[in-house]
Length: 250
Image 1 (cartoon, helix red, strand yellow):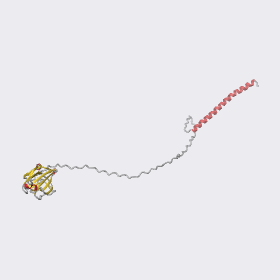
Image 2 (cartoon, helix red, strand yellow):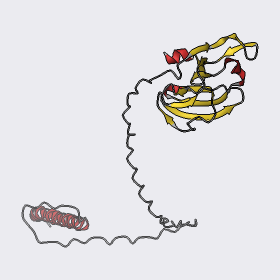
Image 3 (cartoon, one colour):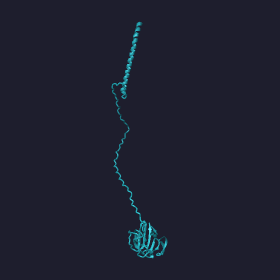
Image 4 (cartoon, helix red, strand yellow):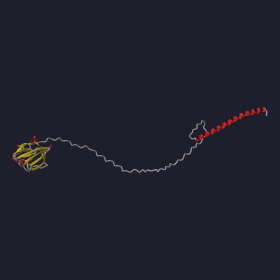
C-alpha cells in the first residue's frame, strides 16, 4: 500500500478508535454503577433497623427478622441443694387483757374535832400520901422507905368512888398487894387506876363509863397500905408512863 492509502486508513481508524474508547468507558461506568447500586440495596435489606429516608416513596420492601437463637440449658456439675421452707406454725391469738379496774382514791372520812376530856376528882377527902416516884417516902404500914406511884385519899368506908373521866373499864381484879382494883382507859392514852376498894365493885371489864360514874366504894383492902385505914389509892399513866395524878386532875 502506498503512502496515500496508509494515510487514509490511519485517518479512518483514528476517528473510529476515539468513539470505540468512549463507548467502552460508558459501558464500564454503567457496569460499575449497577453493581454499586445492587450492593447498596442488599445492605439495606439485611439491616432491619436502618431507616431509609427517601424523598419519593418507593415500593414497599419486606423486612426479614433473624430467627432468635434458641436458649441453651445451663448444665452444672455441682449438685444443687433445695431448701424447703416449713410453713409457719399457727399460734392461737392471745386474749385481750382484762381491763384494769379504775383505782379509786380512798375516801377519807371527815376528822371530827375531839372535845377536851372532862376530868373530875374520883373522891373528896384528905390526902394522906402524895405522888413520889423520884424519891423515897416512909411507909408506916411496912416500916420502910419506898416510892409511891399515886396519891392516897382518906375517906369514910363505903363512900362512892367515881371515874375521873369518860372511858372503858379495862379490868376489875383482886390484887394481892393493892386489894380490889378497877382500871379505866381514857382518850389520849390516859389510864386511871382505883385501888383499896371494897370487894365486888358495880362495874365489869368492857363497860363504858362517863366522868363521875360510880365504879366502886372506899375500902381498906390494900395490904401494903392497911396502916392508913379506909382510903382510895389513885394513880394515873399516859402511854404507859406513870404521871402525877395532881397534874391530871388539874
